[in-house]
Length: 387
Image (cartoon, rainbow, N blue to C red):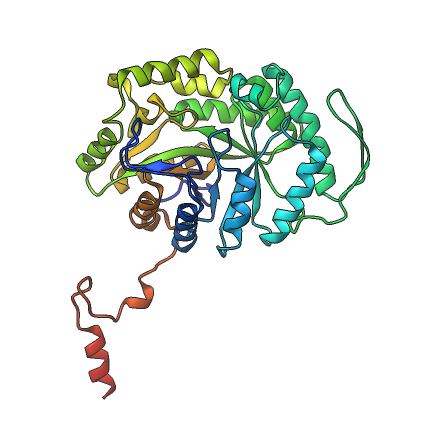
């Protein structure tokens, strides 16, 4: 299936599991701990496979995204790193200096993911006690200061949450200004996106709901004379046959207990104030018999995982059809993942990328080699022709 007419070229990012990885959700069986050596394996694999970038998550259970990205940037060639910019947790002036340093170190491979936070309990542990909408008001001031500094301006600002006098950066980023990515489903979140960010992200909701969200965000930005790009965060379970794919999906949650599901849903719906998280949880309501929420869109991951809770499940052809549907409504960036992330990166690259026109051909250099995969005599034939 070809890309929709007029659609922007598709960027397909991957995910660095800085909170750990594994083959099953809800159990420590076949779990991989969050170790830098493993992050390096994933990052170097996706760099070689042709993924243009990776997302590094943020939170109390994750290794720090800035430090991890710094280490990985020195070990990769082309890969871009989407790291968390945390208004309220750090100062905009300090964040601007970090931005400039990492962008220079990586030769312009830094992207920023603005995370305002949706879990009041975790935010309280970081010393942040503002209610939902006020956090976005604070983030607006933070990003206004940050944008001015990384753009080389001398900043004077006197707001409700921050005051800066003659702020400046003596060492600027490699890029003119590293792009800002942001996901927020609430009205306050969309207002922030309309004013200040470059890429508006959504979790993997059904296409109709994504279309409605994109239309609202696009209209808000247009009212300010701005345009936004749009991206989506999804898991992928792609196999050569449909039966294999759905069996892999069921296997992934085969150790998840009903008590774990109940506890997770209480946390998502009652303890957190994230509108996006509530929308994710409401797709299935914690019911195992309601997990297929749209063709090939499966919400099983969201039974216990916060944040991105849906996966595209199916054959390469089926998943490409679903990706093209998202492209048709304005999505030009996918941030994908799969369990375990190393093996699933290869599956996505080998099964999906050829159909999407993405990635690199790692077999090009081996077309004339006779081995157990090609079972040919090309090398011998070439030698005979030359003799």
